[in-house]
Amino acid sequence: MTIDTNGSGRMGGDVRLHVENLSKIYRGRAGAVEAVRSLTFDLHQGEFACLVGPSGSGKTTLLKMISGLLEPTGGIVALDGKRVQGPAEGLAVVFQEYGRSLFPWMTVEANVELPLKTAGLPKAERRARVLDALNAVSLGHAMTSYPWQLSGGMQQRVAIARAVASRPTVLLMDEPFAAVDAQTRGELEDLVRKVWREHDMTILFITHDIDESVYLGSRVLVLSSSPTIIQDDIAIDLPDERDQVGTRSMTRFAELRALVYEEVQFAKTNAGGAREDRAA
Image 1: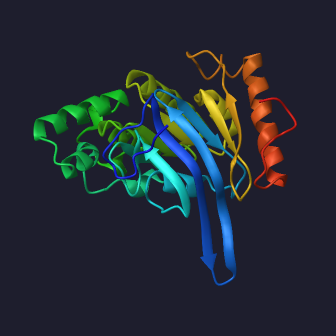
Image 2: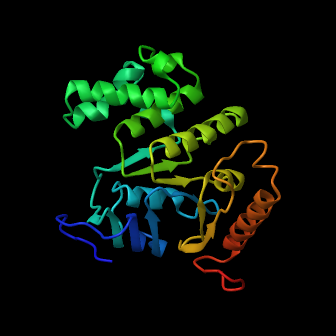
């Protein structure tokens, strides 16, 4: 696999996101703190990968480096073979704090349209994308509303629609449902899987919720404690069609949940170490 470091070429195959030997060291008066160590994984076209780990394992630091918002100390992040060295076209991010990412004085339509307008897209194309994205999250009726007039769950739908409207190669989601109630969370989980399927998206979803990672993902990447590595990469072999009651009641769901839970518990007491006591 060849990475184009000057931005002129493409990576072969269906790898959308390539992360290789990524590291982050924070330096301060008290000395150096190694947060991320030689972290490597690939994300392929159409995958829905969830990333979990103990508190303080560097999930958000990792996302910021992948999205180009934080410069790594070492290693490579590449999107479709082009090295990411700052906020990159083709990467969209949905954050947990949706209220801070939406402009309260702008309508829902204007909030979703803003990145497209900044990118210089023609007005007709912008409107078509906005309509498509809002319909995808069942908010076509709320175009003229303002964020402050909507519930928390609806505001997060607006944030998701804004990301979808940019038609990203990879969608990064940083604990996007952590701030909503349990019922709304279930609805948003089903919504994001619907959007993923219908728009043929590739998603990296960061969460601290083990059940959520198993329910949503086609694979779960488990982070070690800091200094962070990929401790395990678990395939989620559940049916593609999922629902909150039936899927979560399956014996296989319980088995996978227990497996991920075991890995997270191991990570809490084994910083920067991969599992070697069981088969991959």
